[in-house]
Image 1 (cartoon, chains in turn green, brown, orange, yellow):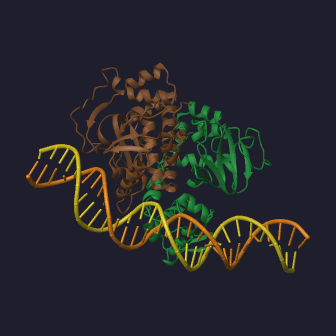
Image 2 (cartoon, helix red, strand yellow):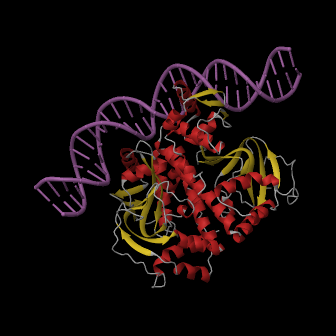
Image 3 (cartoon, protein in one colour):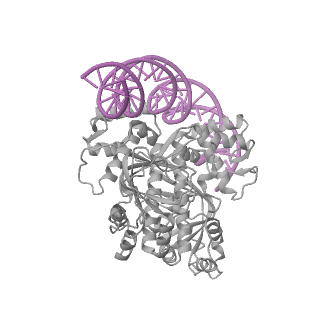
Length: 258
Length: 258
DNA sequence: CGACAACTTGACGGGCGTCAACCGGAGTGG
DNA sequence: CCACTCCGGTTGACGCCCGTCAAGTTGTCG
């Protein structure tokens, strides 16, 4: 079994009798990344898949496991993490609905990290062989998937910079900015209020800090009038100042298609 | 012109009259990553390319530049870096001969980081359109290149962990271990002496530390009998202890093919 | 021999970690 | 309906790892 604590109640092995509309978030994302033709879209809709609703903290990918199904995050949030030898955890990215959470393992057969859900989520499982086959015969699709993994890599690079060269205040502000940008694919002038799906401990794991210091730094950001906060509900009060504190330039997200 | 301070003396626009043997390091690398058939190899050998010998610190990719040629590192070393808003530099990876230094920009048209040589190097320039075309028509090649960028991404993830969750001693030891492993594709039981191509300031930029602290930490590693050092010449004295201090597990390099 | 880059060393300070206690809301069970 | 538990968040005291600043040393190149 490729995942451990997942609830299995929505098992649906049928090859998408409903026309594959469940995979719409994937199509939506791929269309933002690269142009697909009608043929490609039809092929993706026909992919056999299994939809599953899972709870908070469910492992979608587990380190050292060998992979035969790719996981697609249809709804909810997830994060990707590694654990150091002495047990410290580092979150290396997070993901929102539509993201292909596990593209690495089309080519790398053994997982080198974990992916877990943040809160309740809905995922789709697709056999690697299906995607591999499709990629081999459809250059458009192959390009889109490749491009997606290149964007992921670009985000990892920005995280190395974030964790390596920015202070706590900037790191956390940067994380918030990235979350805001990825959540609202089309950003208006000023972001609305939002609910952070992660705990302060997870923010700490993503920024290379401790939960205690994250807490204090969030309070500073609030005291300085950049954000307002009630538990995990956030309101951005000064978007320009937050971006500036974060040293945030969304270019690394490569969101404008092409 | 796609690079700035490069010496142009070896300009050679001819489509590889010599049978493309100059690109052997690329073939060697791709063969380690994935199986190519004779046809693929012949196609790569026929790629028009321009060989260039460049000096220390030459920019192979420059942030914000738009890219029309991909850069292949034939001989020497290079590093990839980003710069934060207040001017701090973070090195996010380094590369050895054979690496395709700039695969990102087949799909992402605008560079989000810099790549510079470490010491003198020899590079090959290949038009993106050539590679893009080849990838579109050759599934094997497409897979190999994709796989290569997935491995790069895996290395970035490990670097996020390294910089985010390990102390100075482990970070530097980890950098040394990775360098040793990537340098000698086939590692014997104990690594031989080697010359580090980077300055202590560059080690600092790669580990998120300051040059001063890198210096002190290197001295600690030596005092503890893990390494011996004379300027940039290194000898590993206790390989097991160094790997242990580094918390180094080469799995993330995905070097064993498949 | 002078200039320069890289490396080295020491003194000092601060950002962030550590430890530990406490609070508050949500779920649970009696 | 209320005790109990648990997780996540909050606060304070204290200390260390690592940054900062600044001076000095070494090797290299012209």
